[in-house]
Length: 449
Image 1 (tube, rainbow, N blue to C red):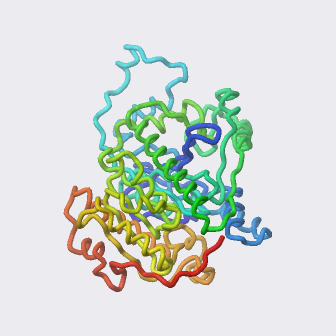
Image 2 (cartoon, rainbow, N blue to C red):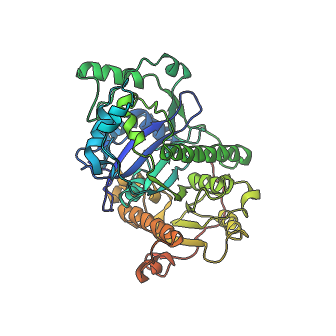
Image 3 (tube, rainbow, N blue to C red):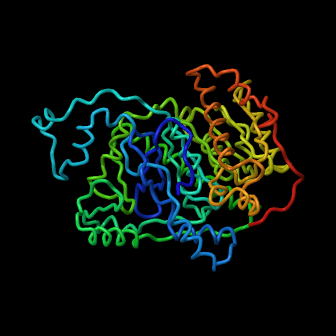
């Protein structure tokens, strides 16, 4: 029951990352190419997240049980806690990192026993920001697809009240941590008694303090602008965290079910594996507003491109509109934009820092706003259309097309290879049956939530 099977040549590995206890730190899901075969995958989501999403959508509470049961049957097509591609070029080193005792010290004799590590390929990275009411789960399809094409994708779960559900751990957890660590789906664990394993996992999960969507009118600019700035800071913080891993600096993971030194190798394997000249940022809707704000306010040179899928411009500070200096993709669904939103997006395109050829506008035919998320994948195509979760274009086709356009846009501006004639035709919008190089919009109307 995989929600989505990615289209790329690589299998995909994944794990969750929570860098700190308390309200600070960052929560994210990390996707990456791996050589590990995908078997049963990983659970798609948890009941609390399902309930949060139903509340956000204003769906009846009596549906909770049914949808929680249905969601429990869905699986992510990934190898959970798998080695990063190339990490098992030397399998002995991976096994050594997984099995090294917690109190082991590096001595000259130990260093002699460690296999010599070769220079491994550095991979491009994408930071992804979800939309209003989203979570790190509900954009798994496009993140999986990008990772299957060779990207490290770090998908932040925002904890500013704009997500339908999230959590944090009380600071007291870190103070009282006794070293127990457990993951029921990991291939190795220090806990051998299954009953004890389940008890420890449940104990860790029960420590979570849940955060739910803060209901507010969409049109309150000060409130939404405060949120988008918070979100942008989280995206930049996640970028910094991944770069710390690349530099071999210490990063903690407090994610329930992923604590302890036997999981350190998951983070250590990213040392010297990120191509720092190929870091990109993207997002959908409120996430696109987040990506735009982050691309403008981050240290210059941090992000090489900015991909905005159905950007919601209202939260963005108008003073930032014309300050963008990195190549930008406006990838739009045919049935989303309205006149004021498009007018604001066009102001970004007039940024003095955007020279000719640095911007691309493309609208995909037969799609609505949900096409960039997993929403249309939960049910049969006809039912998803009836529920408004997709439009004329089949959801998998829409997601793969969005992923492909994003990859081609990045490839064009990285300049590492020449695009083919067909690829340029697609990216330029010269495929009128599929897309066109302009915004599509409807007259303004009130929008509330």
